Length: 402
Image (cartoon, rainbow, N blue to C red; front, top):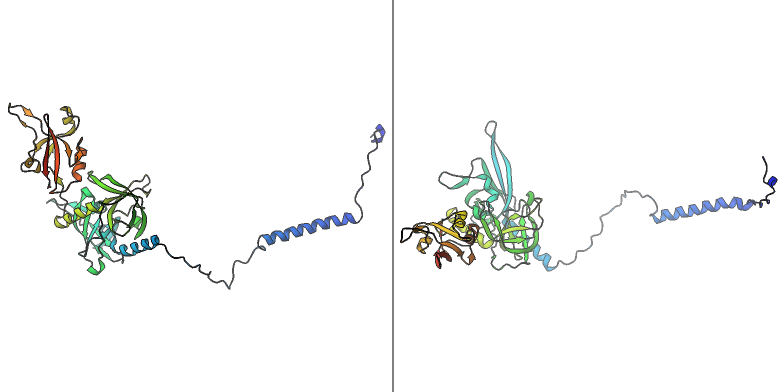
């Protein structure tokens, strides 16, 4: 094979290879550098792997806690003072098995609070609803196959009796036989002067977790929700204090620990708290509960009328209002000279009065009338405006209860 020189190319420059001491020292220098870098890395990482156990290990020194501020002190005070008034309300199904054996299975759970030293407990109607039955005489009682059990803050258990229920207001009153020294009635405030933005506390038993304390604000006032009977509950308090299933029937408190509402419902796409909870205002509670204690039922205010179906009223040419079809004898409406369908002087039937305003609220539909009446009380005198032919008549009506 021809060589480089055979083609008369210029000769290649001669390459000089390192020789002598330099050839020996180069690897040693590299080894030394790697060793130094390795030691530096280990020192940087803390000296390498350490023994995880130390027989001389001692507790860490406690960092002193700073002074609690006024808000924190107030929250602690409210919980300590009010938690003894809050109870757990469990509904149980009684099952008889074998030879006289009785088993109890929990059906539901909720919250409640002590109302007085006689042992009366307030909760939501929907908390105890599944344990109740309607008797032949129209009264409501606890089923023979059910038990309502109240657990106090000191963990003592008491089987409850039913005092009364108000399904339209979602309230119920229970009775336990606990001694007076175990019963600490909750302080009662008012909901008439509440302001959006003021502090609100909730105490209850969400998901069975006893005496859970949460804080928020009054988010809105005068909300409306529907009771289990589908009647409107008006004046409802909205709060962002965390309320979950199990909080129902528990108290909503102001910053002084006074009762301002009974937690009853949440708005949630998931079933958990998303910061929109509703409480029945305490002024409603303080009105309904004495009725339940006196009579066992809530008397609903009534005008004493039978109204015409809404679609029939519209077919007669009235685009709004509630027409009176019949006025019951000796009823509040009769005493106020309101009229239903009747025969005119010429023998022709005349329409009944069309209610257009009740107690300051405009009435366009039957739902409007129910909403206005839900704000009223038995024995209250209200103004009712009706349309009679071409006349507008205003009457003072003193409501009675049914």
